[in-house]
Image (cartoon, rainbow, N blue to C red):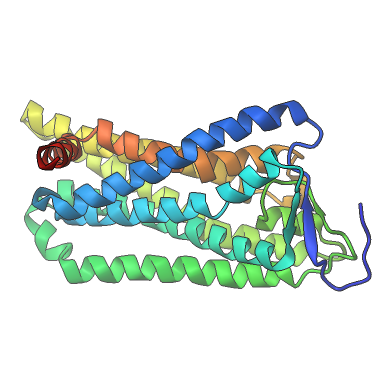
Length: 312
């Protein structure tokens, strides 16, 4: 571990999988394949939601925001991961680390709240169908999404700024692939109990509370769906909601295991695999989950592809 006589290092050394170098090439190849897939899949969702008039509804407005968010989320860390895994350069500048810290946590915090907002939209659509257009009108949807983004930014800016103020005592080695708050807290020296407590409390509001609201929403949705007499109506409701639930568990599971425990108790390789999961796997799978389980999106994609080939 290098020691430098500065309050902050000029750069961080990201160890990544230095103790398991055989993992680097397979992970590099996987990221090289999944990153373009994630970008193309999410761009396709955004395009069909904008082009197809049938998808001009609150649900697809929120889905468009989720796709844009996932593109930014995965872009904030994957290029750095590819650099770390594919080259001998294992460093990131202090400024680069700070920028990555802010963007990564803005996207993560916003996604936590956006997924809860999407479950509320499904609750209103299925449990209050007659009031849906009144409650989820365009003005309300824009206001809700703006609130979610502002909340995510507030969380990230405040939490990341406080974390960056921690003394590092000359340490500039991070046992991770990217810059992430729990790992920086764990690396810091001196008294950091207050930072650990603050992170846990904030994450309760950004992880545990939204997840509880999502589960309550889907309990109400399940009760309402079983009252639907039409088999086709039940299938459509379950298809839409099951896709969202799969995305929720893919995102919240790893995030809770990472952020709702003290950073000092995190195992060595846990942050690396968790970052790969909720920063790479989830954004890659989301477009496929929503497409494969949603007839409207599949139909819109088919129409879009058909019109492209017809024009050619």
